[in-house]
Image 1: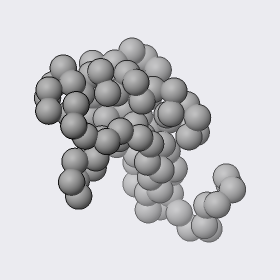
Image 2: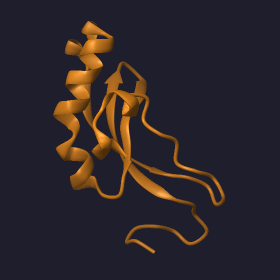
Image 3: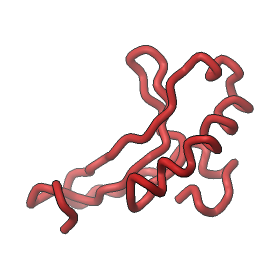
Length: 87
């Protein structure tokens, strides 16, 4: 069990995310650690800009996701556009 994870929780992963207002988009991931996701933020920003040029005005970063027991971590919405390191 990784540090900071409560007993009885499901899988944990980190995503490159985009933030627009109160909405968050999960672009690339899941990644096993924060550092791996942080390294992909520039690629996530570039790919998001190809899909929606208005992302130039949005915030990008990393978000940790912890699923409930038995649930799966979903793929990032831009994983298919990215290299194999996206997941």
